[in-house]
Image (cartoon, rainbow, N blue to C red; front, side, top):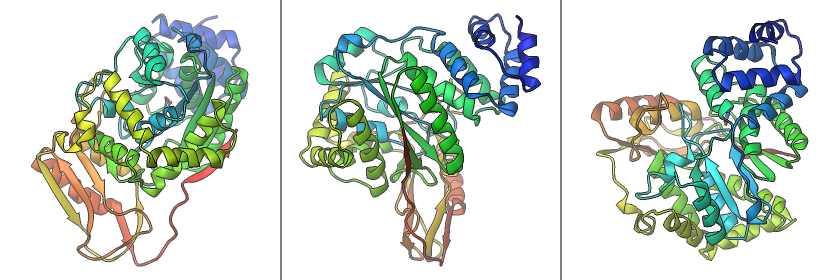
Length: 434
Ligand code: URA
């Protein structure tokens, strides 16, 4: 067996065996297969796709390419949650303390943002002192102590995915169903969870732009979950406009805190409660989805979710005075309101375009090693379908340079589309697949 034969087979639309896929993953992880050969192979997969069997075999090989986390000492059903990515997506920051406050143990490893999408770890790191890089023993101990820990990937989980993901990013091969499914599921299989709830985003700010494509991705991941004996539920959610109102690291943390204190934007509430209700169910802590949603709502109202968030932050070394008084978060130098030039109804706010605008303000990275600015971003004042008057505020921009502020303002006015036509509020939960 050699890499040339493997590339040739995929190039010629033939099915690869488990051994051939294992050979590729092993060789690429230990650097005996060169980047240019891996790039040719990945492009062939992107163009010609994979059978279900190939995708499953690729996933298992990737999951086995590094360390695997063993969470059996927790003696509980661990349910992992993952999103396929979005803009303004602060769901984990709200949902995980909330379900933890209902007795669902949370042992969560999250990622950083890349390109136009944000990452939970960057958001958590905007809380001064919060340690995202604690070791695994401390991670497990924190879950035992307060029922929740959220950290970055400190273990060498699925190292093949790390290499393949950055390669895909550099050769325009991200939007491929077998490649996304194997990337996500290999990490989930290696992360030690027994069950998985996936937020499969769909729309302009997601990798999957249509519901059909999102369904196809979900089906693929559910199948892989079955083969790996990890029950998987996919919630297909709308990502046509940013989720909630804030986009940008500390601005999103503040929105998450406000949510936990009872100020819940409707779209965010629907996504958080639906994903949470399934997490609670899979964890064996409540079979009735509607009741689970009610219990989450109660724990917002009685402050238990907020208290759990405080415990999480304190336990990871974060300064909780920032959570108790969010005015302490460092402010951007330029804060400017943008007003509408016309009256009408908001027709669309392309989430990807908004993500790029916020990334250009400094909130995101173009390359992995780039520094990010936690204080910049935007806060929307209106959502799609809402009425707006001429001269009414549309959005506030938080910037640290006058030039970037000007550029963001110009682009936002182009992205926020307003017409006279009335339209219905977009549906947030598109489908539940299991
Ligand atoms: N998230 C991942 O972890 N991998 C992908 O390929 C896409 C989104």
